[in-house]
Image (tube, rainbow, N blue to C red; front, side, top):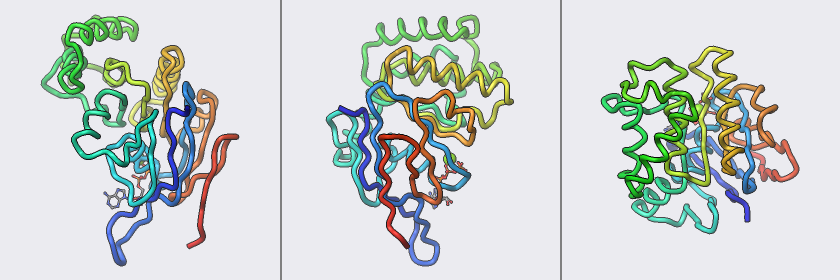
Length: 235
Ligand SMILES: Nc1ncnc2c1ncn2[C@@H]1O[C@H](COP(=O)(O)OP(=O)(O)OP(=O)(O)O)[C@@H](O)[C@H]1O
Ligand SMILES: [Mg+2]
């Protein structure tokens, strides 16, 4: 069973002359254990697609199935709970809670996802160690470097042990060398832990790290591998 099945996803923002068709009939599968890179220029619909797959945003039409659940059918509360338990997000802006320490930014996820506190704490400590930020665990985000913050964000995405990891442009705000390191680290973590992942990026270096690349242009997916199908209708 694929980790994600996306079928005929479309998303329009606004209406009338301000209407933007950000996503048009996107169809693809993400296989179990597969890491997919999603490439495309600014404004092409990458974040839109990722947030729909991650059940943060409802599509205008179409279907997203994660595992055996059709998330586009879930009601708001169920969707929130499903997301917290099953999906790990790494956003470009990291979204760390500024008044919580590095470690607390991880352990708080036990409340968010309604998971066992001791188990999540244990996993948090192990991740801090594995990602080399153990010594910074009691620092607030503002007392961390960009790369350290990124590592905390990666650890937070993994701490609930989700099957699916969604990453939006991890390199954008980092310098090139560090960005490349973070991409590799994240890809390694996803692979090593047997997760499935989608990484949104502007960066073609990602193509080398991912199992497969798909490209989006003006909301239309283009085949970049054997599993991709794109149903683009003219207009
Ligand atoms: N909330 C919104 N309301 C109206 N239009 C939106 C909204 N969010 C995105 N858009 C538009 O939808 C299109 C796709 O946006 P999206 O954020 O998905 O692009 P992106 O590929 O992630 O771009 P970037 O690489 O700059 O992050 C753009 O034209 C954008 O202006
Ligand atoms: Mg974006």
